[in-house]
Length: 127
Image 1 (tube, rainbow, N blue to C red):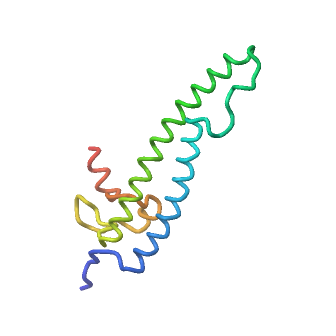
Image 2 (cartoon, helix red, strand yellow; image 1 turned 120 degrees about the horizontal axis):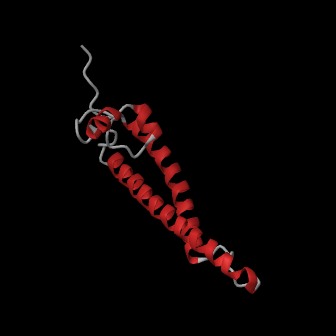
Image 3 (cartoon, helix red, strand yellow; image 1 turned 180 degrees about the vertical axis):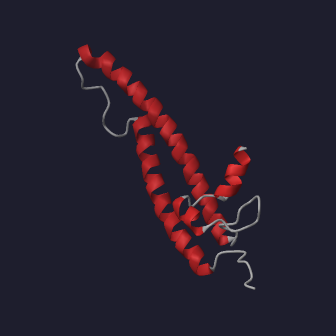
């Protein structure tokens, strides 16, 4: 009888690490963009608009900043999860369901590389 795999191989971990680093770079780029919107470093402020449209522009700017703030916060949290996944790779605990101790299927980790629960465990928690 074949022994059940308890962790991913170093080669598989390297594959996951490359995927996570790619996603981390994209997430950090998006985060920077949102922060720039919040701090108006993107050059799109209302200083050069006529007074007639200034009120409308300010209203749109506030909504845009609120959305950017929400999105920036989500990106920051996503970046933290990706960084934590990299730590788990270094510790060789990556891909292990924190509740059951079993390996999370590779397909799930390719789709959600920061996952700490299998779909089954996650669904059981919702019940």
